[in-house]
Image (cartoon, rainbow, N blue to C red; front, side):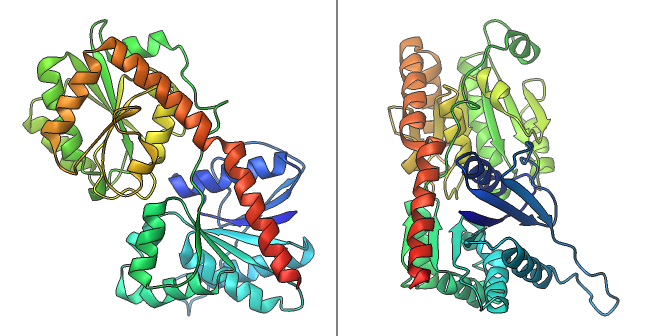
Amino acid sequence: MRIGIICYPSYGGSGVIATELGKRLALRGNEVHFISYDRPFKLDMFHQNIYYHEVEVLDYPLFKFPPYMLALASKIAEVSKWADLDLIHVHYAVPHAVSAFLAKQLVKDKHLPIVTTLHGTDITVVGHEPQFYDITRFSIEVSDMVTAVSQSLKDETTRIFKTTKEIQVIYNFIDPQEYHRVEVPDLKKRYAGTNEKILIHISNFRPVKRLKDVVDVFERVNRDIPSRLLMVGDGPEGPAVHRHILSRGLEDKVHFLGKQERVVELLSVSDLCLLTSEKESFGLVALEAMACGVPVIASTAGGLPEIVKDGITGYLLPIGNVEAMAYKAVKVLTNPALWSQMSENGVRHAHNNFHIDQIVQEYEKCYQVITKKQAY
């Protein structure tokens, strides 16, 4: 098949998933065309079936803001014509699904079905804004097929937008060839002493991640177990969490590592992953941690209970209950047999239920269904 993939090229879960999906589709014999304003940062390979098309936005004095949505629609239409695309797969409802719909109107002489994958913030943040509510709902309704990365996100979308559109749940995924525990003893020595445990948090440092809760859980764990905390990522809550750490006298125990494109090595030296979010449409970090054999202590937010198996691959606790999270963390870290069992369970669970090949096949089935429908 000839597939157009529209995604954000920057650091973030939706862009990573879209790019990895496209790469694997290409390896499976499909022709994949990425369309975006920049080359996706995970598009780090050459393959004869992969193409990248840059969206160039006109810098015209009358435009106060660059009309990216229109430029994207024009580029999608252009590529769909000369590459004879079978379908467009957009990641994020606004603006991508809207641009795809405009492109579809521009190429009415050919069938161009649209598959829209909802990742979370396009619904829970952007879609909540009054000025975007109607257009987000419209983008869902005009898509030929809609998928969501968790049942939680599907239910929330249906509730918020009161849509009757059928939404199929297709989970995010990991590639076990990339995400597996590796031996990096020198890296562990860099951050922790011989008898110290390493806890890790990875996110975009936004308020919904509840970074102060991460620090408060770590502080309680550190009272009972000598440990260090790796904070991976960056974002608007960075300054506040720095101040919180200073107020707790933990500055020598916490390492800020900034944004990292590759986290396998950091997960491999970690003993526990903390994810205290109040909203989490899927929880890709939790899945990546489990694939690397790291037990997860997480909140019950959003899709996390669909990813983390409570008492089996980690523990799930109510949002904000730092005492309970710390208690469970200490329980895992002080019981080597329990830690080993959860580590093994996490790897098995990730491989058996979220393997990239399994998920890509689900998307291919969607493509086949939607192109057959359009043919009639």
